[in-house]
Image (cartoon, helix red, strand yellow):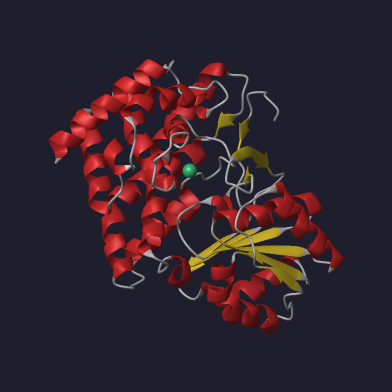
Length: 365
Ligand SMILES: [Zn+2]
């Protein structure tokens, strides 16, 4: 990555969202290629197969092959997808499913030098629009972030498919998106002070801040609507907040304390929650580290509690208090995103902030 103090924005070329949008996937695919290859997980593919294939065929760009066996985004799987897509002469990859499938699709397309479209089937992640792929080992150990030369050419979100998937995914997605309203400003302030590194564009920062307002105004209603199986305006705007606004323009960067705390906690045994849920807790810890007004912290904690997002350590799983210093140490690893905070954060200050969050959670009850 170059470090020259330039303002940089990276985002998808096109974003389409709505109930029944899957019917248009063929129309858009045709703009980017003739020979689409689909990459997905098994469940996702079985859910959307008939509509996806019908739309591609009707547009005259039938699927030429697929791999529906993604369970983890590994370099081995990326190579396998590349080989198969290349052998069949694919000129477009469609990543369909959750984060692992779309990350595999994005990385394979990037290495092949062909465009990628993403078609998410749930809302736990914003991987669909990001210009990076998170690489793991087969046994789910983090390897690295693989940065792509460009973001997907199209993100197509059918809200009847992604919005009405099991509601826990929507809640996890809101937890992850919550962080963007705090991490992006922290990241932007740090880069501004360092001068030489990539600068956040004001436009990207504003969209990420607005994401937080949308979540506060519509998040709880969106969950209720999804539970009733109804695609409403609240659900639509929250899906846009998760899929487009959180991370908008930041490519794969822009994280700070919330994700670093997530990374520290996942090093401990006994953590039972998923990525977005742990990030929501990490966001509350970041707010305490930032000495945000008590009213603001309380508002976010109440919102999390109402959605079922964790606001205390005991809600994250069976966390051994003795091991918390290990998590705090790991969260402050200089290679992690804690270094994107605009002030020094030490393992001691992380532990103090966690203790304060415990106290606030008790008062909240
Ligand atoms: Zn995240």
